[in-house]
Amino acid sequence: MPKILRLFVKYVDALNYRVGRCAMYLIFLMAGCLLYSTFSRVVLGVPVNWVLEMSQFILSAYYLLGGAYAMQQGAHVRMDLFYDRFTPKKRALTDIITILCVIFYLGVMFAGGLSSTNYAYVYNQKNYTAWAPVLWPIKTLMTLGVFLLLLQCLSNLIKDYAIWRGTPIKPASYVPDTAPQEGQAI
Image (cartoon, rainbow, N blue to C red; front, side, top):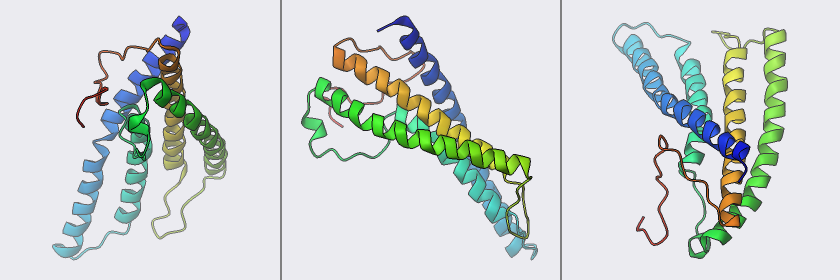
């Protein structure tokens, strides 16, 4: 594989690995918000109206920023009816075909995300709730998550193409190889 493609894979994998590892901790922030809400409502008798919406925003950032990491680690759900029986080259070809569909879908999602984020920023769009937060920060994070997932799909496409050609790209040392190897028990 050309050096530029190997560098692209290396840097995209490194970026998504680090972003995904940081995004993991957002679940604790969301749990803290929900615990605060429960404590405030039950113990203090003072309900807060912003917590449910904030926890929805945090959860959105959590799964969208972590999506590329999950794809990198092979943690997304897939139907393995026939896939496990394929040779590594046939798996790579199957992945190439399916990832092209995913790339098209994510490209459309990213274009829509850019448009929606721009609208939210230009017009200072607010949510129609009592708290009425501005929406551009969460829309920016969501669009960034889709972009990172798109980059990871391109990285996976390159890695699958390399496997299909018979010259696999060795994973970087910072990324643990969690995918089961040929003949390894799951």
